[in-house]
View 1 (tube, rainbow, N blue to C red):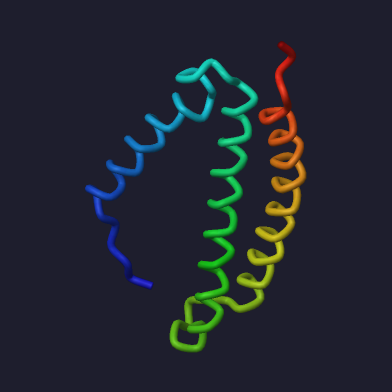
View 2 (view 1 turned 120 degrees about the vertical axis):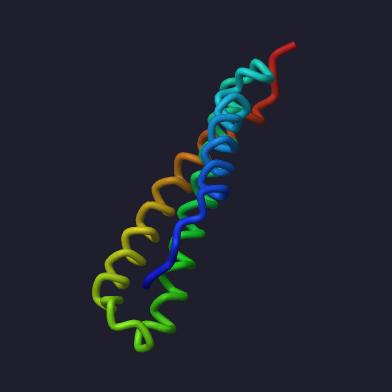
Length: 103
């Protein structure tokens, strides 16, 4: 689709990903279960984002011959399956992270 890469955006994304690892592992708060929950929440948002991208590309596929509608359908289905798996794990992690702590 002849889209150029933006090195500033790539560097910013790389830096944000590295910094987020500290928060999402629970190292900054000492709460590993909360870190796992936040990681799964972030992953869920990412999967939903890519599914939205595939759906948007399907809308304009007729304008870009390089796009393959059948491949987009496969990518959408894969993202939906990934989202379901993540949601199951995210729910379980949320229950553990927010469970009342014994006094």
